[in-house]
Image (cartoon, rainbow over all chains, first blue to last red; front, side, top):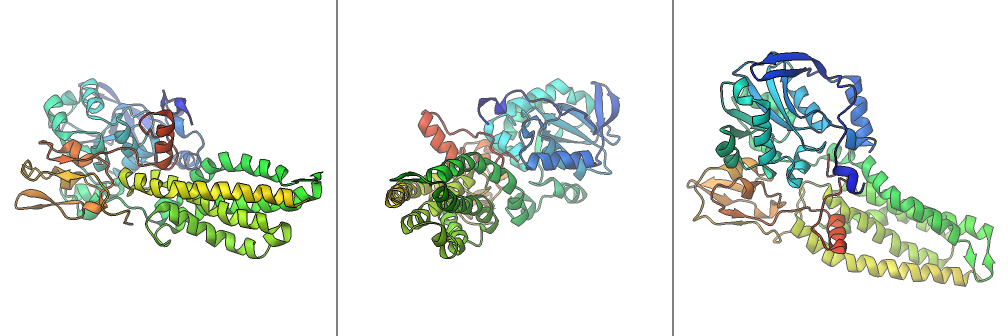
Length: 358
Length: 95
C-alpha cells in the first residue's frame, strides 16, 4: 500500500450510524445507534476484500449511545469502522459514552502497536472532549488489546481517569457488564479459530496476487522459448504447466495454509506452507503436469512451489495473534536460505528445460 | 491457541521489583502471568508473542520485553531499507 496508506484517512461518507445530537455540558455530542444495518454489512465485506479499507473510518471524539448520563460507562475504541461497529453492537440496549480515538482508521491492536492508540492520544482526547464535565465518575473502559499502546498508570497521572481493561472481544462486553466488570480468563485470551483465519483469506489472496499474477504472465510467455526460437504450441502446453504450478503455490500459501494452520504439523509457518504446497501440488504433478511439460520443469516446480508457499506462509506470521517477533526472526534465519536455494535451483532447472526443448 | 517456537522470547520478569498490582495478568492476551504470593510469576512464558502490553503497563518496569512487528515481510523490508520493521497495513494484521 505504500507510504500513503497510513496518512490522513477520509471519514466514511454517509455516517448512517448517527441518529442525532445530544447536548451535554461539554457541548453537543453525536448520538449513534447500536443497530447494524445492511450498509454496515456491505462496508465490512468490502473491507474484508481489501476495497476501500483505508477510508473505513469514523470521526474521533465522544459519542452517545442510548441515553447516557453522568454515571454512564465510558468505552474507548479506535476510529476503524469495524472496531467501532463491534463496540456499538455489543452495547445494544444500554446507555453508554463511546470515546473514539484517532487511530487513522486502524484497528485497536494494530494502532496500539503502531503508537496511534496511545497514552498521549487518549489523554488528549479525554481533555479535548471535555469528558470530565460530561461524567461524574473517573472510570474509562479500554479494550484489553489497547494495553499494547496505553500505559494505564500514565493515563491516571495525566488525566485523572482510571483505566479498566475490559475483555479482548467486544462480544464479551454484555457478560462483562452484567457480572459487575468481571473479566474471565477466557475473555482475556485472543483466539485464532477457523473463522478468524478464514476472514483473512481474501486479503491474503489479493496481496499475493499482486506478485503472482505478473509472474504467471511472464512465465507463460517465456515457457514457449526454446533453442530453436519461440513456439506458440510450446507456450500453450508448457506455459499452462507454469500457470498450474504458480496457482498451486498461491492456493497453498494464501488459502490452504491459513485454513489448515493448526492441522499442519510442525510449528514454523514456513514449513507449514511448504507442506500445504506438497498437498496441493501432488495431484497435478502426478497427473496433468507430466502431460504438459518435461521432467526438468517438473523438478523445478517440485522445488519452487513449496518454496513460494513457504515464503507466503512465513509472512502470514504478521496476521497471526500468537507469533513472537523473536520466533519469526529465528524462523527466517532457518527458512530463508532454504527458500532461496530451492528458488535458484528451480530457475536453473526451468531454464534447462527451455534449452532441452530444442 | 496454537503454539509457536519455544525458548525464544525476550520477555523477562524481575520479581524483586514486582509490587503485585496484577496489571500484567489483566493485559496479557496469552495467559503468560499469574499471581503467586502477591507477585507475578510466569506460568507459560513460551506463549508470549512479545506484544509488549505487560511491560508498557508495569508501574515499576519489573517486566521487560523487546516488542515489535512480528511480520516476516516487514522485517525483510526493514532490513533492506536499513530501518526498523514497519507494518505496511497489510490486510491481515490490520483487521
